[in-house]
Image 1: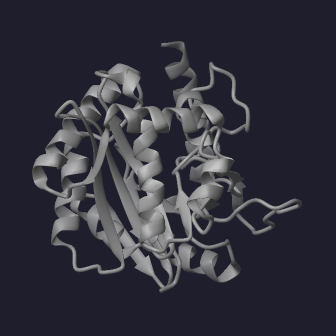
Image 2: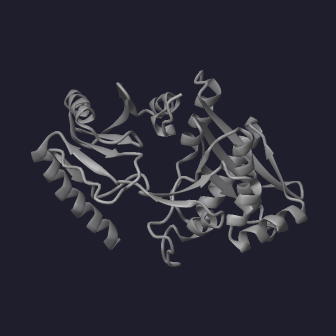
Length: 311
């Protein structure tokens, strides 16, 4: 099959429709339409598609006009190259990217020995410690384990004070997958067990030749047994067993060596320990449909963000 990102898969579009978001598909494009509150206007969002072309923008212009969009935000799944610039009319850099511009990708074609060698010494130590303590990693796609995942997700977000989708979002994702007829996209739920307790749960996606790690949650109990470190290693081996070529870790900080005050510091350091490649994508762009309203929208959005920072 054509190697696309999960956010461009049919399954994902079906899922987003069930969350109440309008999904539009045209040629190789799949985007969502979002209403601007208290107006008759909308904004389109086109994440993780192919590189921007004239034909793509023509299709987006038609979609934008049909759906009364002021603009469509585009975030291509394309790595940045030197001197990579877009010179299309009505295409502007976005003020507020939605999907992270940076990522970690691990080469799954390497042998286990090569992968272990590329890891940080502390990461290898933590994996061995978890194995020695008897942590067990199991794939369990049952509804009961999914409920455990929801419980740990709530605990994790409260403990670490970061944004996560609500319970309804995750339940809709799980229900859509269970009912899906999309044979090219699969979801796998892994759990880490220690002392008869579930300490870590991860949801993994498989699409094309790539394994993806979009969602994970953990307990505050038994942190010393390093269950998350073993979970990542077992996920890597899981991807290799399936014959996949890449492991997309779904986000990283914007620098190779972030400072502790960086909001992505913790999960960046965790993923970095496994020796993946740090990737920068081309970034986020606004394709403007209604130029007058777009600049009014940008001005009001700047004021909104300024007020939020004062709170």
